[in-house]
Length: 236
Length: 215
View 1 (cartoon, rainbow over the protein chains, first blue to last red):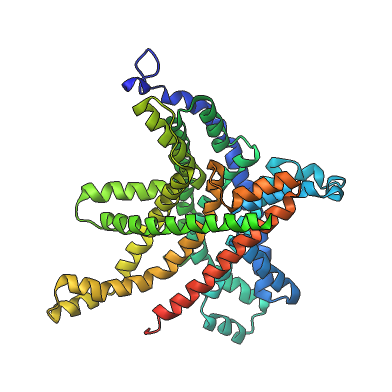
View 2: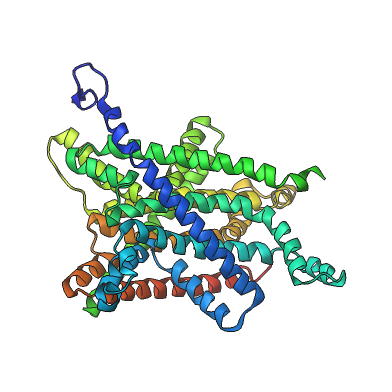
């Protein structure tokens, strides 16, 4: 009964035998997460700007984008972006196909577009939470649109940074879905190992521990950033 | 083939609703454990919540599906599979509970202390106070958060297609590979998910206005 705990002759649990393999995936997981976050940030900033300035047609399109990306599962989005284009000959014959057939590119694109939508909602909410009187005061002082926006932005920062760290964790967790389109990040390697050995509890347990560790480190880093970025508000 | 997907979305809905029901019960228990006076209850409950919220959802689903098979193998020396559906329900409801417990705890704490003190001053018994004064207000505070988690749960159901539950995502995959029209069918699946989400959102909005009509 207990030999599953002690699978090698030295009497030591063999659980950590899986660790080197799983750690090979950390790099790719971090790459997808980092690139996804960056793309998400760019998308979110531009969309928030469009919504904030209420640019006629673009604002409606943005609303549609937000609805579509936040209302459907990330897995469907990844499959749609990775498998979808193959249906059209003209895409396959165009330059875009060199990128769209790459699972890594598609995973980052899907994750970034998804993160962009959620982050945009976050930014928009934080900007809306800035008291209206502040905008009016800026205008009364004769500030132009840009100056007013910069005042609002500084105020909104305080709300955004803690919430954004949640978003980072969400993207890191979401990067595990890249394994469904054949990318060998942590989750992909864990699934392959599991298929070879069926030692599920040890393998997924270790993979889970790696994810928890990464999440913990990222959260910690954000707390430090938060302290630093908000110094001007706490010191007075 | 569209009817195929429609039937599969009923599967998705059933899965989500079952997970919601189980998850709510678990969330209440977990919230109780997290707020308990006994460290022996509080500590594991806190650890459970923290761990589950830090893990990728797909890992939780796989861990429960393949892990239960491994445990059964260690006990019985045979490969027996639990039904993917119930493994999915277990994973999704545990995830829901981990997040839901936080919402409930926040909502309970958000009920003004003065409310309880007033009830005490009026000589109402503690249980009566809890049921008739604390709970209705907790519910009101918790509703938006729980609503959000319901939407997350709905979207997370797509993951159980990976362990072989014949839900919307699973059927979309099957039809897409049969017809060589992935864009069309994944697109239709996305639209069905979108409709379910939007209808849920509308329903939640109505529920919220009803619950907060006294505010």
